[in-house]
Image (cartoon, rainbow, N blue to C red; front, top):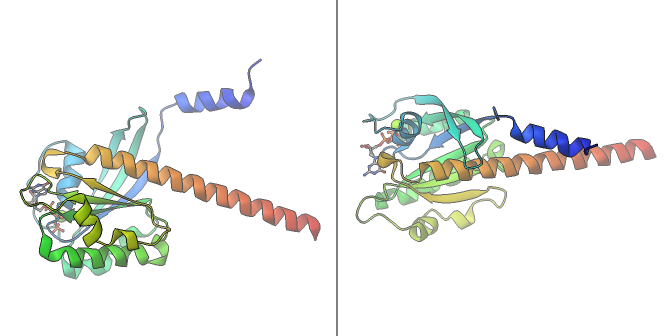
Length: 211
Ligand SMILES: Nc1nc2c(ncn2[C@@H]2O[C@H](COP(=O)(O)OP(=O)(O)OP(=O)(O)O)[C@@H](O)[C@H]2O)c(=O)[nH]1
Ligand SMILES: [Mg+2]
């Protein structure tokens, strides 16, 4: 007779996964957010116009482990006047993608301010951030080391998991890798939250027994 638990685990892992994650794409205007969204959804280049509100798509992706997951992605306009509404899109989000234009050297300070502002919001504590160094195809694009330094990523809260991914959205370069990485970070966080909940329940049970 087999071990019941491991039998169940192997059955579960062989079933298709219908997990769905809520993702928000943010970043300054013209960084390439909408290009990222449509490149992922239609696998073709879409000529974009500046986003006045938001775009949203449900994107089904087969990950490296053959699991298919759905990302419900919200791409929000990055113009200055639209940034105050970003926080309403990040409410209860599983992960954020923060897109940076790697040739827009003059606005790295502005990008840094927005990145730190959105990750500092209390509701976003612990939410993984995939920082996308986009437009790496262009000459004079900043290197990952330069972007990491200019955006002061080392100063992000220690509770914020982050990863920096070079991309060229117009040809889809790096986008699949970044979804994989974001998915890994989300799963890791969910496991940690589950563990914390379990530990808290054990402590509560212990105190209810000794009372
Ligand atoms: N060379 C190059 N151009 C890119 C890349 N990604 C996007 N672009 C171009 O950058 C411009 C802006 O792209 P969008 O996707 O509209 O930018 P956005 O971040 O959605 O901008 P807002 O909607 O105004 O916030 C477009 O002309 C894109 O074709 C890239 O990887 N390389
Ligand atoms: Mg846009």
